[in-house]
Amino acid sequence: MTVIDISASVMQFLLAFVVVAPLLGAVAALLPAPPGLKGKNPDQAVLRHGVTVTGAVLIATIVLAVGFDHDHPATMQATTDISWIPALDVRIHLGIDGISLPLLLLTALLTFLCALYSYFKLPAGPSPKAFVALVLVLESGTLATFAVLDLLLFFLAFEMVLIPMYFLIARWGSGQRQAAAWKFILYTLLGSVVMLLGILLIGLKSGTFDMVALATDNGRGLTTSVQVIAVLAIGLGLAVKTPMWPLHSWLPDAHTAAPTVGSVLLAGVLLKMGTYGFVRILLPIAPDGMRTFAPYLAAFAVVGIVYGSLACLALARTGAKGDLKRLIAYSSVGHMGFVLLGIATMTPTGVNGALFANIAHGLITGLLFFLVGAIKDRYGTADLDTLAGATGAALYGRAPRLGALLAFAAIASLGLPGLAGFWGEMLTLFGAYSPAEGLSRPAFRTFMAIGAFGTLLTAAYMLIVVRRVCMGEHTPHSRLSPDDRAPHAADDPEPSGAAGVRPAATTPQLADIQTYEAAAWTPLAALTVLAGLWPAVLLGLTDPAVQKLLAGGKS
Image 1: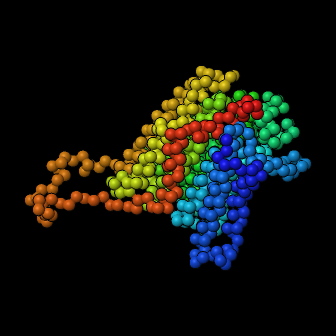
Image 2: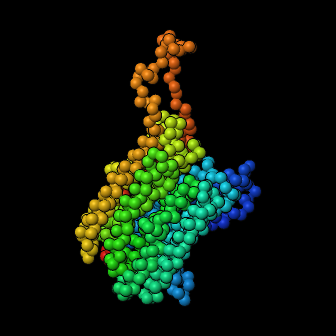
Image 3: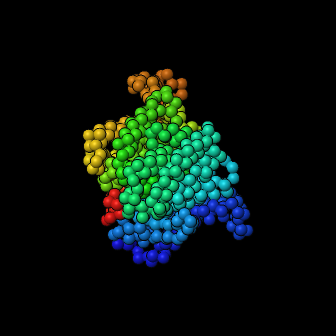
């Protein structure tokens, strides 16, 4: 069933446009603007260009989703297959199915919202031209990662996002931005070198880099030892990007230093490239190798869940001087641990849960980083102790809509039923309860119990953050008796009003949610509710594709 019947050639064009248009837009952003488009403010003109290009890509992606055949989500659609390097049999092979389509939509949406937000709130740094160009290159690389069906093209797209994210952190970031940017690039590049060796091993041993053909073969053309080596090599590169504990240490520094839109894109879409690679490449192409490493992957995943939560609790405690952006970054380590646990089960239930958790994390954590960025802009700091102090945020009293939205995002992140964060974690734990044949059921049930304990820790630190930032700390004055707090008329030299009572102290008001902020944040909040109340929208796309993937290309 398609909502609108769109011809195959138009679908091919739309997918190619979605991948290439941001790259062309990046080049155009660096060129001098035509005389009629310069406007009075060249900086605003180039920011408007960024909004226009990302908006066009979002519209094209939505049309692509509308024309997608939802009755056959396991079939590759909108495919383009052109020979590029015949000597290596490398092809420009594009296509989407029920696994990649939601990630394309998430990427296009978040990039557009970041461009819209930046139009009104550009981070301090060099030329806006360079900023817009880097964001567009980042979008093109991410979209290409989810759309290409050739292993070497996947690697090129996977690497394409590193340089723009490096410069966004190093030039538009704050604090220890240079050190954080270097740590980010070194970790991910070292992981990528190892990943390339694994990709070349698969291509040379199987005779093709075509991901569809390799998935259909389901590892039958590769010996078990080749699969084990390939999973180890490729898995390391993907695990760094995910990030999996203990390869995660670049993430908190990168998030703390990055500008708001950099954090949103890093958490919302870049982390998904790693987990997507596990599902698209390793599960169908090297199933025997994955089966060998699945228990270890699951073990690292649950350690990451608990470690991330404990790190957040440590940052949230009074007197720890914890940075709120850093806390949200550590929460991502825990949430991505659930995604890895679902993949490690190698079951349709677990993998569907992982893909759902991927999208939910992109929506919720993207919203959280937007909110934390807005709080930092208003208060000049993201230090939790400062925000929670007597003169701190107290958002419920000073900016009630901002406080309410932060509380909403926090309870969505902790997995409250009825919101998007719940379904992915629940399906992942169900998958761990009954893992794939050949995997140790007692071990995975132990992992399930540890993961479930992690959800309690997540609830603990998120509720502490909401209490401290939205309500503020309890002060000694708040515990005085009513008689102690009420002034006596006789002691009041200048009584006010007939009863001689002082006017009630008013809480200083700060800027609440602005119109442009509401425009950038409302879609994420609405989709968080929609995915929580109607999970079939997403699971209906992913489940048939996952079933086919795990069955070796057979529906």
